[in-house]
Image 1: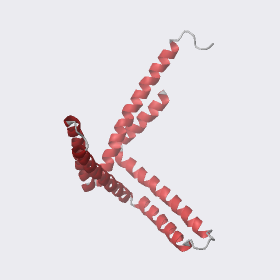
Image 2: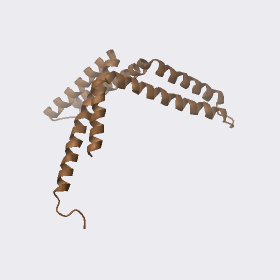
Image 3: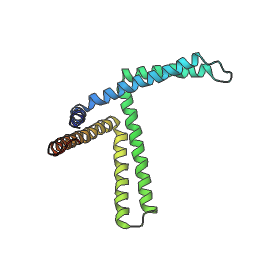
Image 4: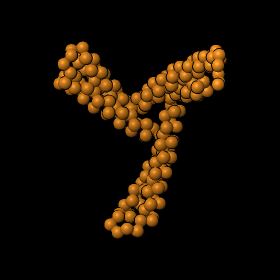
Length: 174
């Protein structure tokens, strides 16, 4: 428990202090995954024997995927920006849905206000991330790092507490 807590804390600290590095590593791993999946498509297209299957279409899709993966590795900011735009659009749409739900479905005034506020906040956050998608991903990395750091400290404290409780047990084994 303690070692897992230290590992979680270390991961959180890396995310907190080096968010740009983390987003770059995310892009690198995503590019490698895209290349591997596109390579599978490319290899599958070489061995398709059934009629009616678009062998050349799958081959071209595999080649395009490999080139896209290489592009993501060469220019990682493209993936970060695309991910930020997707996240911003999701938050914007989620906020609209929350605002509509709070107005149409919820009857309790306090709950309606809280859900409406959350919806408008999601719309605002989504708009900010759409306008500056790279900053949105860095912020996400920072928040994830903060969460992992706190979670790691809690795991360490829990592990130390468990170790202390185990040492105070009078009968350890039967």
